[in-house]
Image 1 (tube, rainbow, N blue to C red):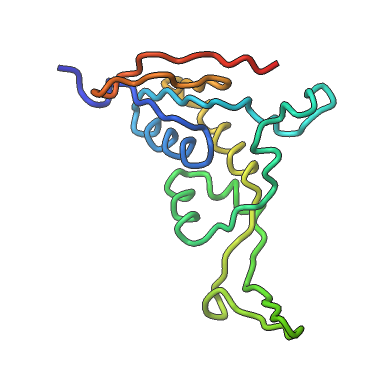
Image 2 (cartoon, one colour):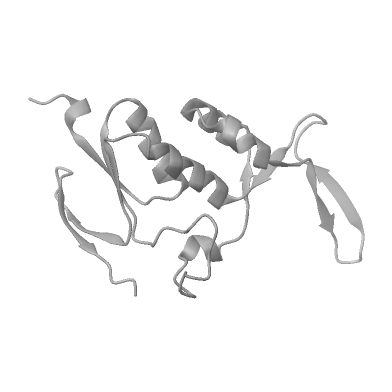
Length: 162
């Protein structure tokens, strides 16, 4: 019987969680197939990109609030030092009540807070890191059609994106 390390792992979705999981597995020498139904978002959208075909990630411009847990995961993956320069610290939020009063609510103690960072920045770094692992294959514009009960991939389809 083949060892677990020799068996391919299928991950559905090349967003932040899927890419991070693929990276952790690749670092442990697993073979990984990462399947994403969307078109990859270019690092810097150019005029050659067809309008409306950037993918949902480009339309979703809300930054990620990165806390201690997320930072710990990025450190464990070995990419935190590349993400850190893009972090914008947030110490708290301003709350406006119905009569116009404003109150500052801190995110923890004076030395604590969370960080704002572009989701695409982290996803780009994760995808760059995944390229270093030849046992990782990423398929964009691909939909998983069927997986057997035992976990084996049965069918995928390449989506018509244009």
